[in-house]
Image 1: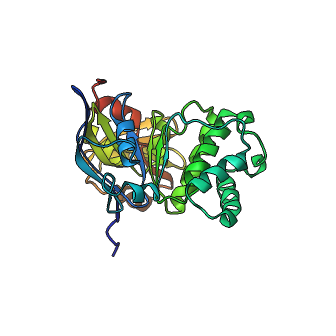
Image 2: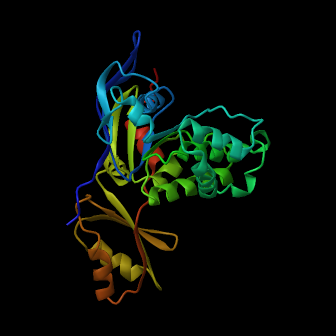
Length: 315
């Protein structure tokens, strides 16, 4: 029996008002320990405001947020020791060497000097920049500076990472390298909240997502659940060895399948609902003497989901 998930972040009725502008309106959100959680929304939706409140840089107008049971307003100092916040634009001391830069922030977190050399070496190895340890920050590429920024966030070994557009402005290779680092951090047990406009990457990177618009929550849950919200049907793909027509004819006779369509060398299956158990299909095909090569669910398209559930309104 699986143990219930441990709550890492609990947001209840979180509101932030600037004069007549409601940046966040009664936001409720839960993030579990070990989640790689995608935070999705247009510019001005309230993503950065939420992350800044969780990082204790901004006080909410009302509502409550806790991180591993600690209140972000009343226990702000304790929160700062278990949270690492990386804004979308952060300053770097370009005339400092990489190790100097990280050692400085290690000292800010009161890591003993005897321990800092090992800590700096560990975080540089984690972000894949050990060979740049003696390089001036200003001589690094944009992608490397982003990874140094991530190393800085990791210097005090936080339990929760808040990353606001960490791949912003990076070329494709640098983005892939950044996403690989985030996967490794999740594997190590870190809880990560990441905001991004690159939805195609979030759909493969994250296990859960939240979509907000104009400061209000529209959806929160598994990535697959976001797709189910816009469609009552479920789509799977089948590939068989040899002539596909016998498989097509047989699949058309099965209940709860409302569409059987050959597409290139595969067969597109559309189930009438998400409750039907798709596992029956491979078993039944094999019983018919049909050799099955592939059977998989259609990839979630977060961009399509986002366009469907949001109105494109900003504040």
